[in-house]
Length: 477
Image (cartoon, rainbow, N blue to C red; front, top):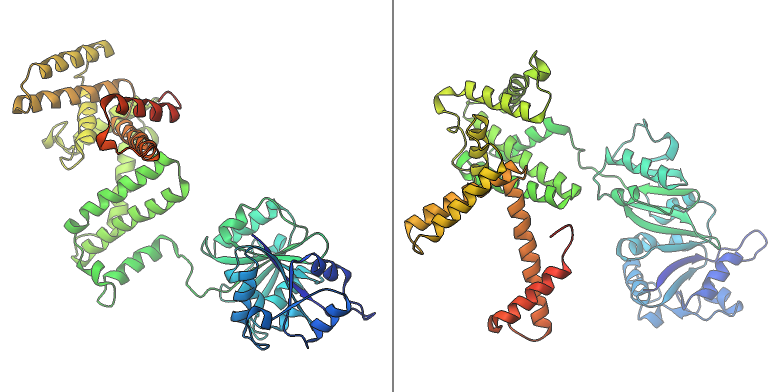
């Protein structure tokens, strides 16, 4: 990967081109000028620096900025390219902003007096546009307008960059594009595209870095109230046809899927994914509440009031006079209060039948144990497991009796998990992920050897499995 530099040849008060700009041009693999008759070509000829003209790039002398940008980026794939212009390169409208939007590397600019000057000249801002210039240390508490251009100056360390990003996140999306301008060794400045999120993770920050934030005219997130309003718009006659057609029944499966995706993000330890999935789950809640509101049954305020009341009622040890000093005591109190709320259904009656079987078995097991239907210790649970295995072995393959005995065995294993303090659902999900990873490793190994899995012998399967298991072993797996 090469690089791109934009170099201005405007002479200083003594009539001499900045020596740092000349050094940068001499270091480049290719120096591009508009034409052989341009002032830039004449100046560089006097300095003995060979050039390539627009014509040499297959362009006309007055090629539009878009074509120049594409040609420079093409050359910079494997070369260090410098574009030189007399009278300062920034007058070539759209050049630098175009490179920044398409290049995969930073853009160096020579010469310039300050990062503020670089940003003002480089980004083709309308001279009549609203522009706010704020020092980084004054940003907290500043009243910023999202529809104005913003330049933040004086960002000279990573901590300050992180602080600036935190302030910007309250107004802009995490992926909102910005441009940083920082000094480089040997003079000049480096322009680099960076999202608000990437700014928060910057480690190396040059002295006196400045940041340009383009305007955005999308309304900022308005919190929960705005979400409720947006869902109302989607369900309105002028809204989304798909959203208007949905019912509680049609959305039920989506609710389950979103909950599982959130759980998967938790298992992966991926905060960004969890943020996204929790948003999807919240969307389902608000959408259901909107559907009910349209039928004059209940609304989101009723949903919130219901859960607040329930939380207070089921936590008498926090909001009342009851005492519960351990998690187990809290669980017993919680279950007892729930039974009082729905006494006609029995201790197990309120466990939803729609839950996945493994999850439902856990809840039933926990409820029954909470009522006192429990082994004295885990040895009794293990004895029951062996008993169920023997009963399953005694059945005929494929019979209803075998199905019943297998169910008994699985339910008893759930009791083992509960007694050991293990969530059976999470344990099985992790095993599925582990098995899938190992099987994919076997497929890759067999493919690398040119052997289809379908034709392997049992011994070959065992060898591949052992290798996959060994390469992925960690944490007692």
